[in-house]
Length: 391
Image 1 (cartoon, rainbow, N blue to C red):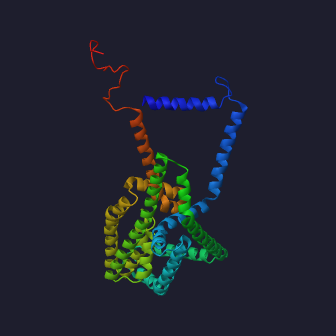
Image 2 (cartoon, helix red, strand yellow; image 1 turned 45 degrees about the vertical axis):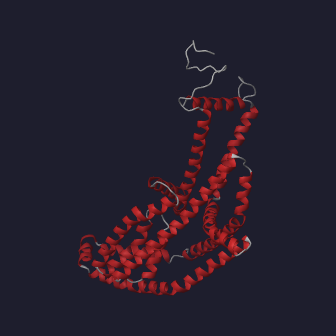
């Protein structure tokens, strides 16, 4: 502790002396100008990062995708003897073909299910109006009139004059984001190894080994998180589909796909994904609705206490408390995107902190001799020996 305090005091004194023209004098005008320009440059940098936060989000998503497809790219480079650019193109082609095939398989049933769900809504409303429980609530609190007014307001908002313009703008922005992410992902996949080699070449000796170890840890965290989230989404969608099939709940493709998409949102994804199929289950009957609630409660316990911890401990290796804190902070900073990238970012921070702590411990062991070590005295005399000991 005393050594740390001494080093800190010397560092502060060195900075203070650097800001003065001579030791003992006040701060020079050049030093003040340097501090002002440094702070101004830092403020401009923060402002640029804030203005371009959308682009930063695209880069982060593209980086995660590049890491996710890298094992397949490496496999094609090694086994098929392809150039890296051609291997990335093959992966893109395979991904596009998979999406097209999935669209041909799932879109027609999804359209039919969505159409049937829309057509069934009036019947559900009529059944709800005939329910004694709803009638009692309507007599007490005028529920149906309030729901009708809210629905009228929602329909009026949807049919407003600016809705088409807003929808077109969002579609265009979404296409721009999609194309940008695809291009950035391709470039990161293509030049990622060269960039990493260049960064590692700037360090030598122990520093080179540390940088290589940290980069390997970051890669494992991101790749493991992507694979883990996909596994959680598949498990959630499969379990929900099996329950809906067993309970006789319709529109399984639409509802199961929604469960899979919501599984990418940490903490609340399972609940958000369950809202539609639980609602449809209640419209099928009270027994199906109660069964859906029971299934949701049981599956959430299994997912939160078994599936997610098992996957995250083997991939990101984060404590559940840090996972919750990271997700909450990320959601407050960047919304849904922040919640999605919070866990891998926390894992990367953990890798860097662990490497820093290990290096600090190593330096302390080198600088400070272990307790009980006898420091040799010039002349070869043992300091523990008595004064009458022979020289």
